[in-house]
Image (cartoon, rainbow, N blue to C red; front, top):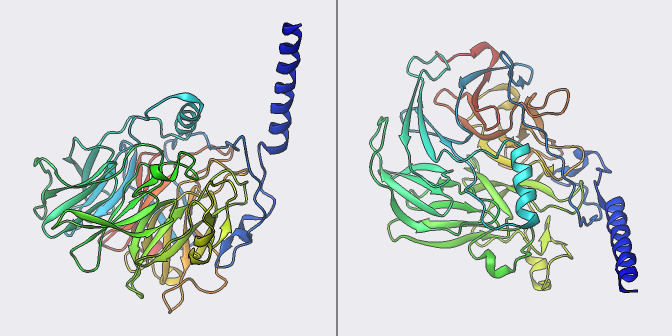
Length: 447
């Protein structure tokens, strides 16, 4: 009798799982992605997923002679090839370019979640060990190609953001902000990095970006959440899902802004002189939610994570609830569409392509894993008005595409976006192991 009961229970369990899969996986988008972009995106009802939609483009790399496709009037060429998972870029004062060849640190623990995360990373081209290296690239003859590269700083721990301030080069390791003395035009640093402040590590969202504040005395530091919606408890999210403000002189930090699930690229808006960032929003609410975004960030802002998204829409999965926060959750300035994985950010005072690209923001979209069809996998441009905010009614404009081939496989995935010393756009491609250089067509090489 017991065996019979167990068999029936097993059959019922299989049926329940099959029904859950049928009802919730994979979840196709039901509205055009353009409706979930811009200043007033369409926020549809959430479709909670118990089994996540997992569609990530297979990483295949670039064949000989292949390159991304630039927008009309622009041209592209490789600035540097053969790198080891280049993720982030920084232009030094003398025009040299630093590239963080880096990846996620080894993930701790086991279980289904870790296995799925590892599968997704391998499929998407992020399964390689971290080189833990910052490399210096130099284009001395100004032809738009780096003819020399030097291991600038090694022995780091999944480094990401870099910035020079007050005679030091600061680096965002996954678990700390460190610094080394910086000598202008140096091609190698052998000094042991000095600890500035420790940062929470582990979990999801390992990358720590840095930006020097306009006062020249503080650093902005991005720290993404360790989870999707604080499912491991809000206590595990201390100093996470935040932009921190670090004072290197006193080696202290404070929360500058909170409720940002995974902020990455940061830049100072040339008009407002305020901090702006791009943020990756939460997963498993369906292919139409929630939009990743571009926004201005001010001291004391809270953008709602994990309890709310897009300025007050509640995420009923989160426990305990926090109703008092709803009216104070800041609405972002501009939606980039769901699951695009916005990482890179640069304004047009740095990337100077002229013409229609003369006033706005360039954004590197790494590409989705939790949407059908996939989104992102390109560099886009958001036009800005003279007010220093996105132009009313404007949608993102494609700048650099072709990272997906005709089969939907990923030849590359864009991450960092910066301007070089001539105003050309440099794009780090961590699957193609290349840095691409984009210029106005009549100026394909610097002069």
